[in-house]
Image (tube, rainbow, N blue to C red; front, side):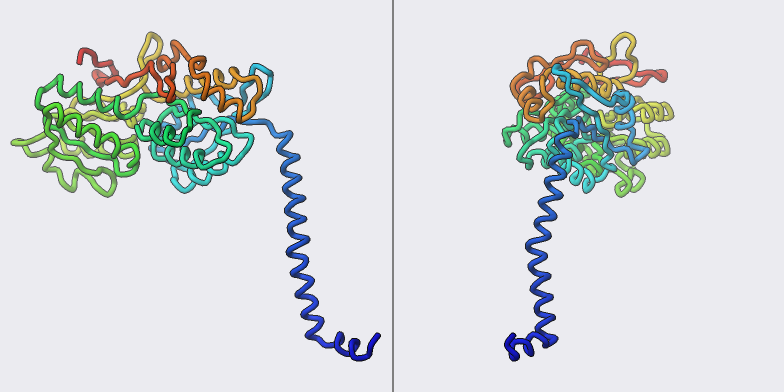
Length: 391
């Protein structure tokens, strides 16, 4: 070897430079090879992994009992079958009642080739997040919405040409109409106070805006429309209830059970005698039971139709019917592929029906809305709920 070259190679800087070059080559050649090998391994594993339905509910807040009631009705089922005999697992997920976790989980499910149907979430805000992640996916799973009522969800899906979504219960337009019709039937020019849940804005703001507009158009007066929750308590400004010269004829709480339970405690302390209407997010057993301590009439909205043998318009019967609809959807396809399930819902909604479910009937229009349901108003009397009719 040339002496000068040999002397050059013996220099420390040359060895260091060589090591750096080798590391760079390793990074750009060996690492991609490892990643490719890992990807191939995951793809091979994916071929044997069964497809699944994802049930997404919030189980972390004990005061938010809608998901607990829903899952009781869903009965902890573990699998479904297609008419071709494919087994489809049912996997359960907890979004921790967190917008961050809901987004993370929704993106993960939307990207998973084996997730064929998402059932959830427990309120409109978390459902909107899940829907957004699914719409951003290149291979969208289908959706079954058992609880969310925000009217905007159908509009968002339609604008993205997403037709693989079914809504089990009516939207906020229907709920606002029922409340407006009821209070106008009681008094032609009612005065109303609306308390808007500060923690579930997608649902509560949407419904409260529709309510106030419809009541005003029908000749009613909105005396008070403000946020309500831990940061905005009635105790901080009780004059809305205590002003005898201009007190409301009805209080409407637009929200879910967390802050609904807080409101009951405050109404009890204020010795409120004004009738209170709780929207559907509050129609859970614990909150209904707690209203027996109030010195006023209490009303509840629910999409559940009480029939003989079914005595509670809560979320347990909706959970039961959600499982039946999932069985209907999956048994209606031969293969359990995400594409076939999606096309079945897109093109064959007329075959996805339930008559005589625990919460009522289900039959869907072209945009996935349940044509067979409307909200009902229930009155608590003598410890029982009875459906209000004739308004």
